[in-house]
Image (cartoon, rainbow, N blue to C red; front, side, top):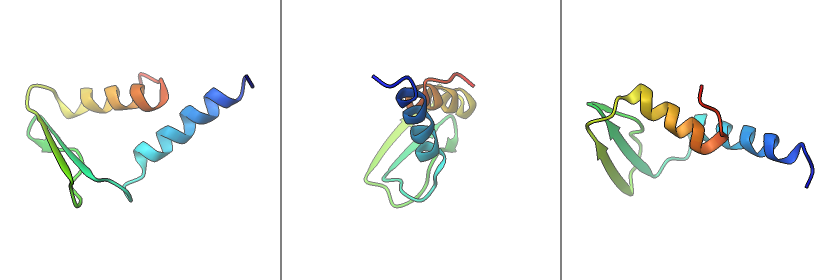
Length: 66
């Protein structure tokens, strides 16, 4: 496998995460909605801070902790 493929894929996924154009889910963490567009699903996580949840999403999408 090309050594440049995975870093490029991670970068592309992080760009998707940071793009506010296409969201179909609302995730509420703490008391602050993470995304608030037309929603098809709703997840409420009141016991996690928005900052920590953002770190988790960046790790899931791009393999980066910060």
